Image 1 (tube, one colour):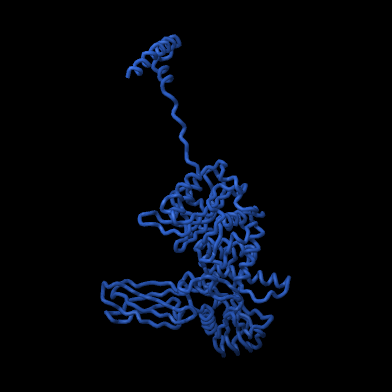
Image 2 (cartoon, helix red, strand yellow):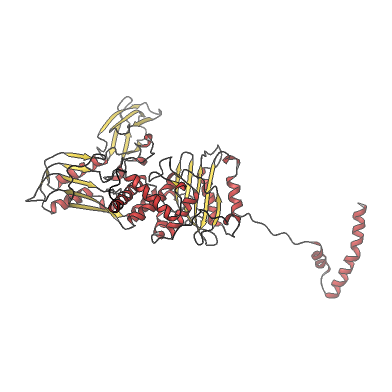
Amino acid sequence: MGSQKYAAARRWPVLLGLALAALSLGTPVVAAAQNQAIPAPPATVQPTLAEQIDSLISQPRFAGADWGIAVISLSNGRSVYSHHADQLFQPASTAKLFTAAVTLSQLGPDYRIPTRVVSGGEIRNGKLDGPLILYGMGDPTLGVDPATLRWADQLAEQLAAQGLRHVHGDLIADTTYFASPMMGSGWEAIDLQSWFAVPATALSVGENQVDLTVTAGVGAGAPAELRFDPANAIPSVANEVITSAQRTHNDVNLYRAPGDGVLYAFGNIAAKSPAQNYKLALPDPAQFAGRLLQEALVRRGIQLDGKLLTVHWPRRDTFLPAQPRTLAEVLSPPISEILERGLKRSQNLYLQNLLLLAGVKAQADTEQREGSMGFVTSERWGIRAMHQLLEQIGITPAASLIEEGTGLSRRNLATPNAMAYLLAFLAKQPYGPALVEALPIAGVDGTLQWRMRNTPAENNVHAKTGSMSFVHCLAGYVTSGDGERLAFAIMLNNYDPPAGAPSATRDIDQIAVLLAGSRHAPSSASSAPAVATHPAN
């Protein structure tokens, strides 16, 4: 205390001198003393974007998980943020971006997919001698696009307009345009009866889905009612679902073995309980499509002498001539529209069929130049074309191990850098703006409709979602707070949120929101290139 008093006593002469000087200059004594005694507050230091992301992903709850993130500038290619960006991750449905790239590269945005009725002969005097062949060429929108809702009647009307009245032969539903199994590589058998893993076939109809409604019977012990839409879409059903007492637990079970057309339904549904609704895969889309055309021929007064037959790969249609004559045809929407519908909804049939279409085109182009290459499935041809495109971009084969078109396979692997540089390449193409709009938009539509609302990411982030058990991803485009366009890939694998923690979707969205609100200054994170070779324009 003595030293403090002594120090205070020494300040008095100084303060007195300041007061006298202030009086002589007309300055208030108090203001002069305050200016001398109170230092300026230190400037507030805001955490950088990298610090904010690092803080989020380094939380203890992620100790057993794997984060991979790549963010690059579309203007100059610099890395804005990188974390394990060269590590391989399961991409889930963000793998659809690779399929979009190879589809646009092989087919272009304007190509329209035909579905045809062909024959080996001509119609003479209203009669066709020989089979009538319904030839699918991969349109996944047949029967759901507004232009083809009445596709079977449209084809029948075209046939009738050419004078066809009598087919002396069979009606053959042919799916052999795709030389591939009806499921993608790595798809799990347990998924194959579900709406999200429907058969991928050259002759698809109604997205190869069936709606099933299970309704309780009248009184306990009565059989439940099963109603299918479309009706008879699953021709063989073993219904053993019974009606149980009111307020009992509903336990409806559905099972169809892979490759088997019989749907087994068993369990119980409580009396007077609401109907239970399910979406299932159509077991044989070609047979169902053939039946629809057969019924349309009858409505147009065209007699069919033979039977309805189906031909699936690896069988070949021996009735299909080398130069088939097209008698009727309906066309899909342009590829760009199919991609938009497929990406917005993450529709697996659309993207797998597009990969197979790209494979058919790649095979035809290669064999025209080099001759027969031996047997390779349409799917593998599509993947070959994808790898060739990625190498042209500058993405090495080891950075993208994709084996099918949807992301359903857990054997798919890709690095965040590969994903981000693919997005950067696509943005520079003539179809780039259309592709950006084809992606789900945060807070607006698609699989992002209810995410990131009331944040800087709303109506800003355009990105493909991807999720399955323990896999959570988001990849796309965002404009930062200072107007910089960015491509990003955020991949979280091997993570199951603990009790009480936010969902993994919330965590990923938080990073996207940080990107949308960020204002960048080049930092150490931006000095390293994302991949060894930059993508070609």
